[in-house]
Length: 152
Image (cartoon, rainbow, N blue to C red; front, side, top):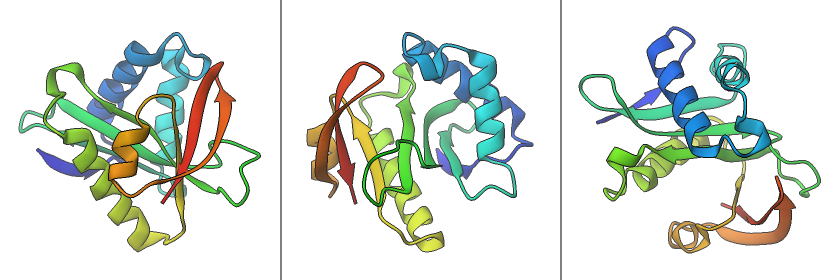
């Protein structure tokens, strides 16, 4: 397992990430259309875009976990420019703290590049993120779900 900052040339990883996100959250509008997901990921990892698409892959190039930094994910949160989002560990890799490790590695990589506070929103993983040093900011509805906005 190793940390990868995905580039547009990593087509197999982009396909795997697109499929995993669609499979996990296809009932929510941002992840209904796999082609739209793919295009969003390609844009996110293009050279002229400061956003970061990252993942862990095994030695065979199979996706284990993914996470991104996203510019302006949600509007209306005071001073929230950068967001941690689309965090997912594939079902076969769950239970090994891979998602937590990837979040930490991406956070450190991001913080060295950009250095601003990073925000996230979650409907159900507040305790995990609090243990990782994230602080609650507010509660709100996103995609018809009650979520907690957090900051680090």
